[in-house]
Length: 253
Image (cartoon, rainbow, N blue to C red; front, top):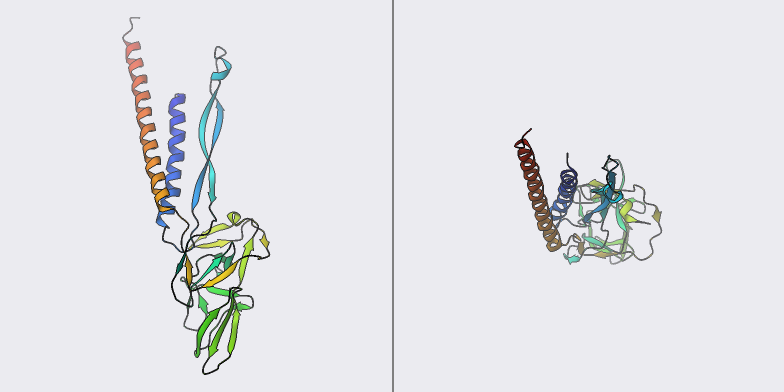
């Protein structure tokens, strides 16, 4: 196959995978606490010419290779909900939850109570406190969450606060190293836990996705145009090759 066709094909393959990443970002533009992914590309050099009559600059061909993706762990906008069970983290920490048989992490603070009074995520996973799951009593009201995550309530007709636990937050040296598990959950992956210094809990708020919808749609149009342009180039190369063969066939023996 000609080098131009190989180079064009390599670029089309990376554009297809880039489109998958962009489409996933767009699909999660309204997912609470979602962190956008972006593609990484690099030049891949491969030797092409085999005959000694090629000069040095013609002996290597530059292909396109998508090296992987990186995660934008920047904080999304805070949206007030006035729901005392909704929480958002102002900072780089994560909520710790019990899911899939172990401790997992999420930025989605859309919480509620299950049938036994335990604080759970929108998927029903237990929200962990520093002493285990946080459980409320049937007579609890006036729920208050302090910036450090301490949960207090007024129990029955009592006039003094009762502590129900403290929201467990987890921070890491590099949150981009966390492994995505789906359903807005992360595993520790290769990240290293570290002490929490600046993160605080904001009650009555939800962190929205940090996806820039306008930017992602612009990138999607860009990718589609690039793919079409390369397809046209490959068609031109194919037509040129076909024309050359037809002309050679007409040359008298």
